[in-house]
Image (cartoon, rainbow, N blue to C red; front, side, top):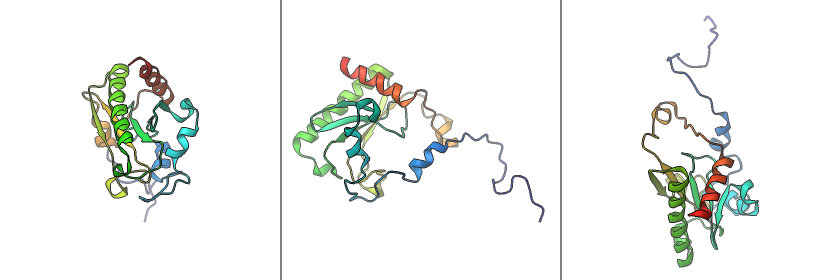
Length: 181
């Protein structure tokens, strides 16, 4: 059999590829606890609040919760509302924590509208590994800003998201807006 130069790269299909090798850390679960009952040891959501806000991409801190930029965002400004307490399930929250999560979610929406001009939102939690939770052992609620036309061909065909701003810049912009809104 004749050896080809492109052996092992697949059948040429005319598509140009955009490589995002930095995402492999996420795909492989680097530094991420596994399982629904993941221990506090090594939990990134337990470690983030120990960092400086800028270093940890924390936008705001409440009494029982903090708001942080997603390290692997679906869209620019993708925030998460996370309890300081290491709990895996929404039913584990007490009444005060549920109230604060709701209030911080409302504020996050207002900030994202003000600072980034968001047109809409996807808001939700993936409860358990089988439901798609990347870090199932520590509850977190996603607040994903959306804009008309943001779901272009890239994620559908290229399985790639284009993000127009560095996380640190987005964090600074949202933290400043958090104080104003």
